[in-house]
Image 1 (cartoon, rainbow, N blue to C red):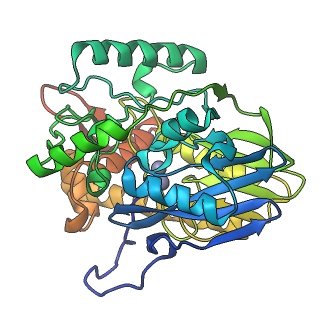
Image 2 (image 1 turned 180 degrees about the vertical axis):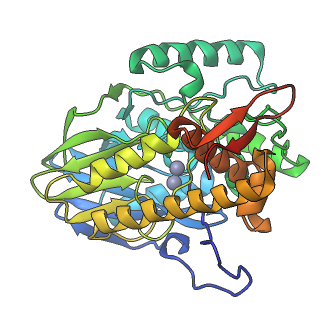
Length: 391
Ligand SMILES: [Zn+2]
Ligand SMILES: [Zn+2]
């Protein structure tokens, strides 16, 4: 899941050319590197037109990376793409999910079940909503215990885990509003709640639920673990930031990085605030530097958009974007005085982006500034408020 963001100073009303991440899914299958296929699956959400399902071909069949949303349209596209590439579903021996967003894991469980395939994620992968009011008590308890178990493994407090909404209740069009906080749930910064989905969408979602198979990883990898796929060795690179469980795969010998949503060719990935005192933006910036300095990367294979060659160059642009956002936020905060996340988000985002996602990213920036000592969080009865500590 990603976010199309206008840069500060954009007029906002002039039509801009379509970004490559917004192109509709082509049914063409292209070989982007020897034994590495790019297959595009349709996703329907503002700002994104397709997700790239990569096929890593070897003599056992193939592994697929990020096989799209749940639902019949996606499923038909998966089978059609595999067919054009000369494969059947049962040739899929491995499914890899780069992170816990539904456009990446949605059909992974079903493929793994129907093809009897291995399902690989990062150690911290979880798809359950925490503290969702609409979940049953049993579901909520399961979610909490899964989160606690994963937190122990990754040595992070449960609050820092990605609190991903229930994918069964998600719809593509709502994707951008529902980042990281359960529907109807309180946001960590206070003062905002996620809207419940409209009635007709709930019906659609119920239909989706029947077709959804929860992705249960058969292998959870840690940073640095090796995977042999497409006849080459890949190193798992843990890249938290966009989500805590984000995973890139790096083929050192051939200089290829499967970058997921960590680095995209023309749009800036969304960074969600993970919780009070948790600096998801720091994790993101640090792991951007990490992938920019991997030796010999000549090809970036993103989850959305075209393959690109200059990973370090793209990292520099994304970092610059966040530096500019931070400066804009600082100015807005100095002008507003002590202010809530919502107020500041509305100062720095154009109106069409107002909502929980904009607030979540503003919250991530503010908590980053608190960690740096350049801002202070004020907690009293209401939502958190923030003030700059130096001019
Ligand atoms: Zn994502
Ligand atoms: Zn995505």
